Image 1 (cartoon, rainbow, N blue to C red):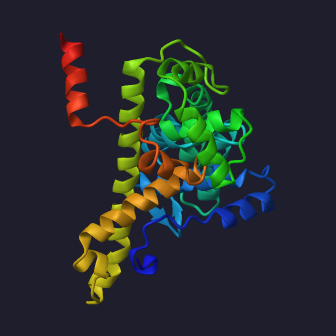
Image 2: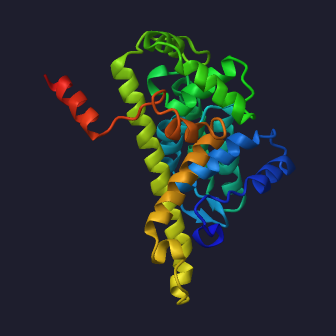
Image 3: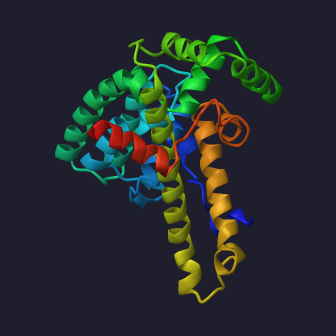
Length: 282
């Protein structure tokens, strides 16, 4: 798979923006927060200018209110994600992409929506499987940089009964216990996890298509994955989406949950969803 041709994953200018912020006297923003903000903005369809995603009120709301809690389980204080957005706003103002009125309005929106995000990240009913299992692994002191240690913990957790697992979910540090863990919650978490990953896949495909437009304009051939092996392209997109979800939680964890431990992180099929919806209508 030739990534130079496909250019699936965002190539964020995180290091440059961090350096600029320090030069301007801003507090250093954690790299993980800024990198996730830049990547998710781009995958959400934000226009790029000189390699940086341009913020609008709609893009800001989508990021802080609708997307980040689906993907990111921070190892830093969640307030830093709002700070990262405000750093990008300041940079856009400095390079004259925003006038003073829009700069002020976006700053205000980023500040209060960043506070809202902190609450969203604590809600058990909004968690996804990678986020939940990242919290469980950290709570048990597992070395998440060691794939064997992660796999060993998952093997042990698999031995627990259903009620024990649900109790562990409800008691995990970092989420506000709400006593809502049961069959419906498990189904909804699976639906959210599947939907979130598909949104990333869609964003990756669209990004790849945009970057290939130049090849088409120059009359150059499409990469093999798009010219004759579309299944290979879809597989590459799926793999990259899982990798990114791991970058935002625990590296390698989303792949393990999908490929080897689907019983610990079930994602409902169409029939399961239809049955659930039918029950709710009765």
